Length: 463
Image 1 (tube, one colour):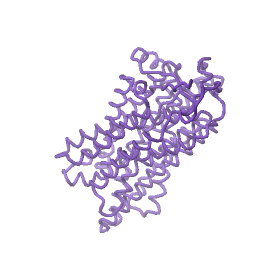
Image 2: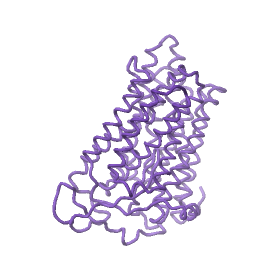
Image 3: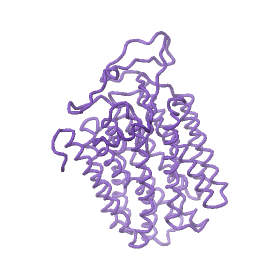
C-alpha cells in the first residue's frame, strides 16, 4: 500500500526557504543527523500503483523521471504568483501623483507587503497550517486569495485602504512562497541546491514582472495590478492540477515557543542568522529603491524624455531585478560545489561593493548605469536560498521549524526599517549617496559568517 508523503511545517522567508536539513557535509558538525533521518521512504507518484518499495539513502542521486518536469512547473508557478509582491511598487510614481504621497509613504507600498508576510508566516507557524493543509492546496488557495486582495487595491478610495490590501497581499504570499520551497524539496536531495536556487530565481523574476508590464507604453496602475492578479490565478491552476508530492518526504518540525530559548542560546544559530540579517538589511531596500533610482537617473540625464524615459527606466528596472533569477541558479550550483559559506561571503562582498559604487552612475549614461545595476541585481539575491540551509545545520532537527520562523520574522521586520531609511537619505544628500549605508549589512553579514566558519572548524571564533 502506497504511503502518503508526510509534510513539514517550516516557514520561510523573502528571500529564504524552509527545507529539511541536508545531510551534514562536514564531520565537524556537533550534532550528527539521527539514524531515523538517515533513510527516507521512497513513495511512488500517484500515477503508479503497487506498494511502496525500499528506502533510499539520503545521499543517493535523484532519479525520479518526473523531477525536472515538477521543477519546471513549480518555477513557472512561483514566477507568476510572486508578481503580486511589487505590483503596487512598480507604479508607485502614479500612486504618489494620485494621492500626493511622499517618497517615504510610497515606500510603505512595499513595506506593508513585507509586514503582511511576517504576519502570514507567524500565523502559519502557530496554526501549523503546513501540516494540516496539503502543500498543493495551501499554495493554490493562497494564490487565489492573493490575486483577489491585490485586485481590491483598485477599489481603494485612499492611501490607508490601499495599505490594508497590501498587507493582506503579504499575508497571502506567506502561503505561496514557503510551501513551494518545501514542495520542491520532496523531489530533490542530491541536487537540492540547484533545485531551490531555481525556485528562488523564478520568484525573483516574478517579483520583477510588474516592472516589465509597466515598461509597456500606457500601462499604468490598472493594467499592472490586473496582470499581477492574473498571473497569481494561473499559478494556482498550475499547482492545483499539475503538482504532486515527490519521493522524499520529511517529518514535521513545527514551531514551538518552548524551543525559542534553546534556539537563541545556540551560538551557531545566532551567527548564521547574523549573516542572513546582513543580507536582508540590503536586499529589500535595494529592490524597492533601485527602480526609483534608475527612473530618477534617466530623468536627470534626459529631462524631456517624458513617457519614453519612463518606459526605458521600467525596462532597466525589470532587467536589474530579473537578472537575480540567474544569480539564484548560479548561487545554488556554486553552493553545491564550493560550499554555502564561500558563496554567501562572495555574494555579499560584491553586492555591498555595488551599493557603495552605484552612486556615481546617477545621471550618467545607460552604458554605466545598466552594468552596475545588473551586477548588483545578480549578486544581491544569489545567496538568499543558502541562509536557511545554514540555519537548519545550526540547530538540532527538532528545533528546525522554530529556528527558521525566528530567522524569517526578524529578517522581514528588519526590512521595514531599511526601506524607510533610503528616502530621507536621498532627500538630504541626493540619490548619489542614498545606497552606501546598505553596504553595512553585507559587511556585518560577512563578519558573522566568518565567525561561524571558525566556530565550526573548532578554531577561535574571531576574524
